[in-house]
Length: 153
Image (tube, rainbow, N blue to C red; front, side):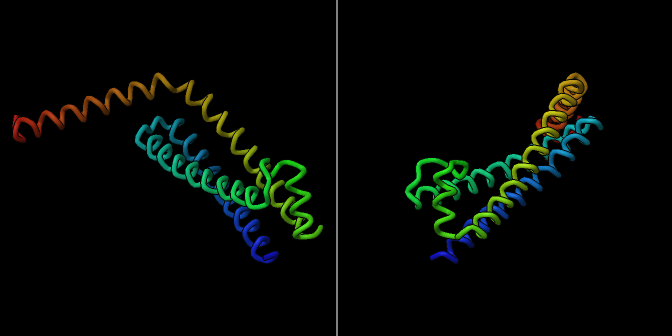
């Protein structure tokens, strides 16, 4: 049981870190898309980000399942969680997990900071992006009209 428990915790932590790293790359790409005014790129990145966020929610459900399995109503940040983990894993296992979560918090904090910068940048470029959206929308309407008329003008 102890090895399975340790493996489950380790797996959740490594998956969560991987997802935050993936999100960090997507936020960087999102900034590049905004700076270049590439709306198609921006929309694609937003779809990819939503996928990562959905997978992060599954990881959070995994943490909640572990807490529930331990008979805890609080999350992994509460002292009762750490007392229970320490009793199951001992101090070394607990220290390893805490170290992993510190790294996750650092990466998540960096992602949040960069996300805020991208949001500010997006607000600065919103007028240009609206123009691009309007241009794309007109192009789609023209293509739709072309096909509706039988493909000839």
